[in-house]
Length: 309
Image 1 (cartoon, one colour):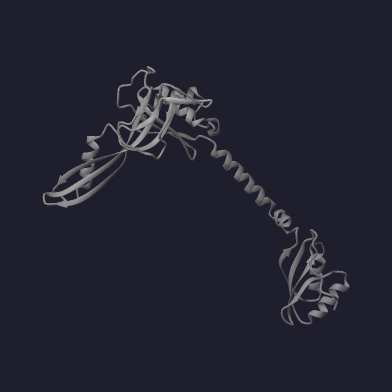
Image 2 (cartoon, rainbow, N blue to C red):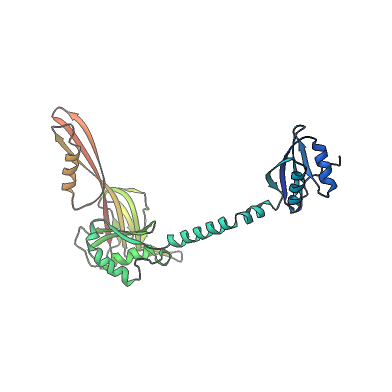
């Protein structure tokens, strides 16, 4: 038997076959005499072996094996050209996958719907008109929309709103509108500090003039400074009036003593009715048994919008 050859390091592709039958040495010698080199021949028993053949000679090899009445089965490929072979073998699948990915990416950039939430959504028609004036409508591209600038524009266009948030959620443009609970003051440019009138967690900070001294996620108390009236320009600190908006998430707790031990919904309704004018985000009810009955503690989380300028 001639020397068993190993795989070459070039880009040749090899097909691996499993051979079953008697007198395997006879089979090997016959194939080699017909000009087909065999590579990495491995005998597992007197009747079973595996070997590799160059892809370009695989049809000839297969014909010889059938002629000699040996059972032959292809079990794989090897060689540096294998990835290319696999790619070409599934070319249609690759093209289909590429088209699907391209369509998905393009579709993800399309606005299919505009959805409103918050206490200010009663003004959605006015906001719709503003969006239309800015070219933002159904089937617009998200990549063409500056969401932060859009928030500022909507807020500036309606003095009955105190907070606006624009976010992309899938193919929907989600716009949250919060009504102003206080009479809007004209901007007089005489405010040099913004301080908090509530205790809570900072949700958003927008500063047009001045310098923020808090950031999103900070916890503040009543009277804490939020935005200070100075700016740094070319390493020089200069005094300026403050023009800014900050939103806080505030906890409001109410307690009610009720006779029943299953009055959570009733207690929650009481609390919501007392604070109906607020933008309630969530509510949680705790129950404690007392001598007088059951104490229900309702914790409401609501959004508080502060604006100065």
